[in-house]
Length: 452
Image (tube, rainbow, N blue to C red):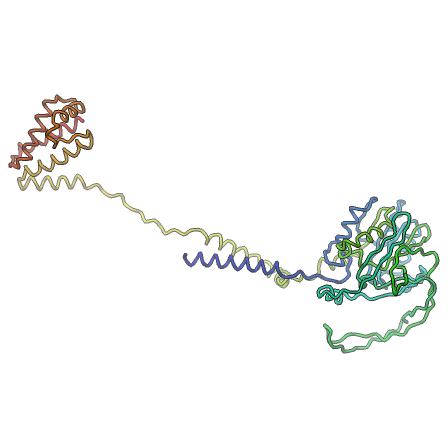
């Protein structure tokens, strides 16, 4: 095997090994709760939106819009809106906040899911809740090392549409819950002072810690809220999903937005919970509103591939593509079998006539006519043996042989017999010959050959 073939095989093996290594590396996911429409990350919503599109009988869509824009359209057809947040604090302006409540009051429905709600919203809707904190990094590490042991039980009460059903989920996915009745709530004041603290065993050298002053406020959940789903804390039921009338519409609030994601859809045992949540607003066309900034961030998010530096820079990206294309073309053309140039071979010249003339001239000049006739006789006998299968040296079969030659040549058998016997006797006797005798014997043999 030549060096070029060894080189091509080595390159091919290295490419295969590189592909296998890339495929064997675990895929890196972003465990942040983004709720993005076209993302396959665990807490995005590509699978959720796909499921809702196929299951909502009145239609389902995902749009970039605001409640102010929806209300300005003044559509007479009622619809249901879904808003998903991890933590809802100041996500909306005052105008958008009022437009949202006004949109619902006009006769539409709203499914509002968040782990934590802004105090202004809770106060306006007359809600009281206990919030929890979801740590993506802790959940990721716990799931990787099998440390997710805390399980919560969710209960969906029996109603006109569903039977009573329980679901078991990880506690990290449903840390928050609502409170019924009155309770005291700590609300932060506006003047927040930020200090810097240094923390060990973290991914950063320092973090900012807010020194917050709180006001104590008594909050109360309105009796207009109707609980639909619960979770158990120390054997006691606390609501996680409730609904109430708001003007001519209806608001459904939920504290488990992380279950309405790709992760929740992939959990086959609890996907029924997602269907029931969607069922609370499925009597109208359903629309999920997403923020344009979130989708733009998803499109521009940094790739986790080892080649992200090259692919992220257009000049390096094109240089990589051209290098790979050149390598592929090199392998294709080098893999072909290489053949040395074939030299032009001249057609060999026929020197037989020249040789015959040279030999004849030599015999003639030396005067050895008998030897020349004997060599001619040898060729003559061989020619007859090859063309007519007759052996004229076999004297015992002369009559048969001469008859065969007479049929092949058309000459009289007696003439053929006389000529061959004369030549044969002269050759066998070894006598010397004159040039005239030599020419006579040669003519005898040529006449027979020419007429076969």
